[in-house]
Image 1 (cartoon, rainbow, N blue to C red):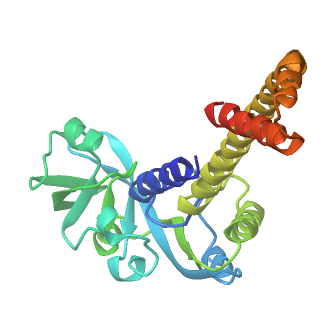
Image 2: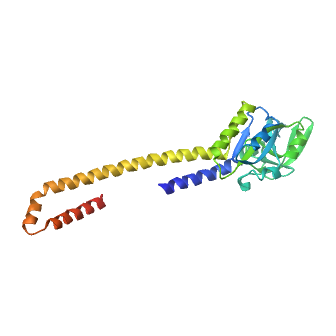
Image 3: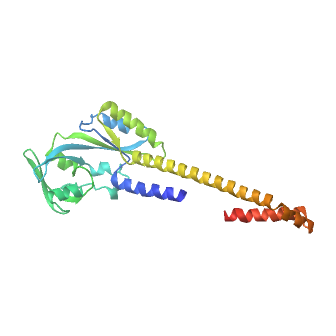
Length: 261
């Protein structure tokens, strides 16, 4: 049971590591993050690294506008839990999810042209898994010079109460941007751990009830066996069996019944 719970936790955390680049992600929910907020978030107890991702509106090859983010690979690396699970586009690259690649008919290795007003840039497609196209921050700022701060990535220390740190980050983000929402690896991991702990507690309780029922059944069986075999016990005593030997006989019978049960 404990092994199963540990396996479930490990599998879930591996999936979360692939879905979320870092411990905490703060997004404005349609409202730009204030310039002072990233510094405030980085000063929260337990936050060891932070980076911000600017965002802007671009037009894709399908002539539809889409929101895009820019990332500084050097600044993002200290924040990531696993660099292997997150694509950080180099200069001249754009990371697109499978859905976006299919929508734009742009397989990995092809080039796509992204425009913003009278500015355009040809970028090489690399595999990504984010909701929005992810560009190198230099490419995004070349296309959208007035890009706003859209997202903050935070990494938490391993030896702290991460739930308390997430609560502090949520309070700061909510006070600065009422529409902000906070997610990420740490919050999802805490939620999964809580669910697994509750399930483990329920299973342990059910197992305890089953053991109690088994004990009552074994005790009832042995009691009836002793009561119904009084004449047999008397006959054994009459044939010379001592009290100690009779008790040992009943004890061994109880051990056998309990073992089978």
